[in-house]
Image 1 (cartoon, helix red, strand yellow):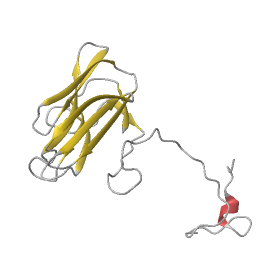
Image 2 (tube, helix red, strand yellow; image 1 turned 60 degrees about the horizontal axis):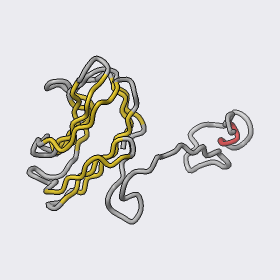
Image 3 (tube, one colour; image 1 turned 90 degrees about the vertical axis):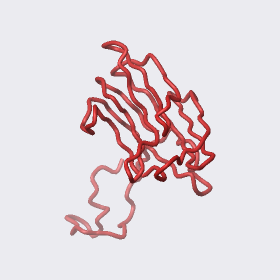
Image 4 (cartoon, one colour; image 1 turned 135 degrees about the horizontal axis):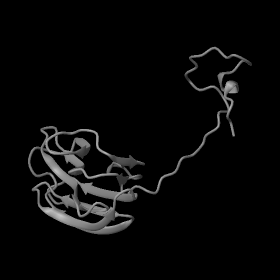
Length: 169
């Protein structure tokens, strides 16, 4: 899951690749006007799975995707918490599993682009927890109450490192 706010146009928003740099899935952008664009989602055969339009530049959109990598795999895409497409098929294709994630591309160059990405979350499909859609997420402030296992600095006041944290509330 990630939040996307494009400021201007770029070809590829997100590309998932193998170790051999083979594209498995990608989300790209098509410019509709100076203020609007559409997102296009492609599978490993470069076949268009879904298009979502119109979206406004400089507005945040939440992008969730879930991939089960298998010969009978599943790819699902949510935009702003709404399931927009499900694709069933061989998500392995050729050249193995996904091992690289790229954000932003223009032409044949991966360079910095003028868009914002925030709140990236990745769940692993193995195990009994955190193996499905990522939740909304949150930041939890944990206040120090004792020294941890690493104490690299000599305390300025007091005898414990944690006692020197000024902002505890």
